[in-house]
Length: 284
Image (cartoon, rainbow, N blue to C red; front, side):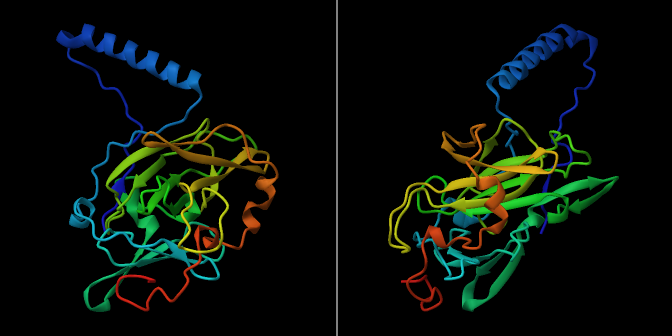
């Protein structure tokens, strides 16, 4: 499946014809001022002007299905594409970005789709899929609490020295239904102070509740495990604000050292009370 091209995300200005020089200079000054203001506010946001999903179920979604997890927390059951049928999101054992979505189709036909194939990067004149080894990460959760699963996506480069650098080429949230191409109904930014290397993403329940998919939690929160330099990491928390996920520049206490040891996966989003495959429409 063709992914989103992120090779041209960092826009370069081109020379304008002389007749438009004055207008271009005014435009550049305006853009420079906007950048200064953005930096002063302290947010690192990425443009999200990509086309939304072409999947017809995104525009006309089916019945909302419960979002719940397997008992071991490694499989999330949710209607990812919006067709009213429960799909599966499988997380890797090491939570290293190797997430795979298994879509349920007519006649119980299953389609497996690696999440990291949704983006491409440039290698000379070739296009290559982004890979977890290069810093691709994704997390699924209902970040706007509307009953549809959303997806947070980051793509950052590993540091080559002890000093962290802004390397993000993708920091965005894709609002559900996501469609089978995972482009989403619409997109927003993950607004952070820095675009440093991100080693892990995780969606957690918006509030504490019993381990039941029938509970009604608040919007899921996004936990971001990000380098702070010299081999150290901290965990930051993001929540929905407007059309974006906003991440304050204040790490969670002690979570930085514990993030990689979390084994409960998606269980705090609600464990499925019965087999999600007991019916064709979901766990109930």
